[in-house]
Length: 479
Image (cartoon, rainbow, N blue to C red; front, side, top):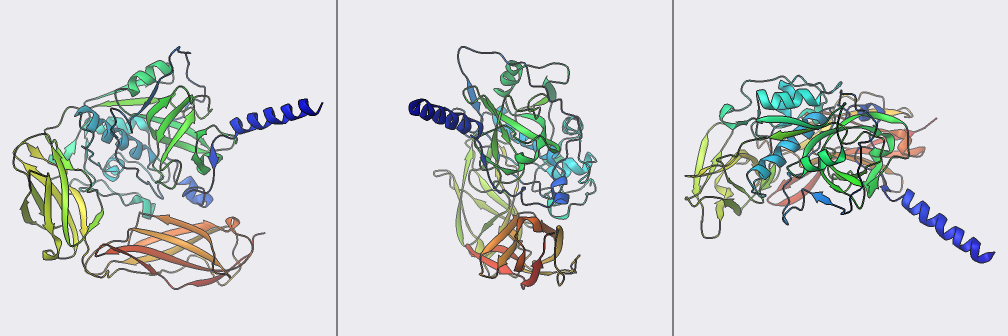
C-alpha cells in the first residue's frame, strides 16, 4: 500500500509539472493598471478560437528564425507602450524579418516605422487596427525607416497625424511589400500550410489573450484562465513539433516572456495561427549596414563602427544633423569599420548611414553624448490628490526636459518604496515624451505608508546616470 501511495504521489507530481510547465511572474504588462492594460490590445479582427487541423508526422520538425543556418534573421524586440498599436508592430516585425531573409543577409537588419504605418493607416491607440488594413497599407503605400519617423505613441497614448514629410527624403526611404498571401484564414488552414509558409519567413498572426498571458515568463504557454483581456497581434516566427508549440515575437519589450518571445501550445484556445498573413518583397540594392550600431544608441569619444557590405566599393560613413549633412568619414575596408571622433561634433541627435558605389544603407538615429546630461524630470500637475489615502488606479504626470543637447532618457521608471527603503513596485518604459502619464494599481502593494518617485536613466560619456524627481509620501488603503 505504501508503495502504491508513493507511485500515486510521483505520477501526480509529474502530471502537475506538465500542467505547470510554463513560468508565471510579474512582467512589464502585468504591472499595468486595468486602463493601461486595455491600451496594449489593438487587434480589431475577430480571431476564431478553434485550433488548426493538425497532422501527426513521423518526423518531428522545428523552425526558429532566430537560428536558421546558425544566424538570427530577426530585428530587435520592440515595445508598443501605452497604445493599442500591436497590429502595426507585428506587421513591421514581419517586414523587417522578411527584408533580411529575402536578401539572404542575416546581418541586414533595418528597422521600419510603426508610427508612420499606424498614423497613415488611421489606427487608433484606444481602439486599435486591422491586420488586413496594415497589410494593404504596406503594399499600397509602404513605410519609411524608423529613423525617418520615430515611434512616440507609447509615451503619450494619443493618436498621431499622418504626415507627407516625416523626414526630408521620405519617398526615397520608403519600402513596399509586393504581395500578401494568407496561409490560414477564417475558412481554411492547416498546420502544414502555416509551417510551410513559416519556412519562407515570419507571419503576421492574431490571438485572443487571456489574463495569465500577461504574466508569461517562459516555457510553453497554455492558458489556465478563461478570462479574455483583449485581441492581440504578434509575429509568428517559428514552431517546434516536440514542444507542440508556436514561437511568437511580441511587442511588449524584453521584460515580458523569454526576452520578448513566447512559445504557445498548438492546443491553446487563443486562436494562435488560425489567421496568418505572409509578405513578399523584392531584393534591395542597399546591401550594406552596421552590424552592432542600433537606432537610439548613445555614443561618445572615439568609436569604431563595424559594418558589412555585399559589394567591394569604398565605404563612407555619412553623418547628418537634424538640419544638414555635416560630415563624411572614409571607412577602413580591411577591417570593415568606420572610426569616428565624436568630440568634434556638438551634442545631440544625428542620422548615421553608410554609402558606397554598391548602395546606401538605411539611416539610423544616434545620439552623441560626450558631456554631462542636461536632462531633468519633474512632477506635472498630479491627476489625483496624493495627500489622501490611495486605492485603485493611480495615474501620475511627469515632465521631461532634455535641455539644449536634446539627449533623451534611455528609460524612465516609476518607483514605490516602503518605509524600510525596499522597492515594492517598479514599472519602466523606453518610450518617452515631454509630457508623460504613468501609473499603477494599488492592489499590487499592501496597505501602508510609501514613498513614490520617478527615475530616469541617462547616458553621458558612456556612463549611465540616474536622475530622479523628489519623492512623494503616500498612504495606500486598499478596500
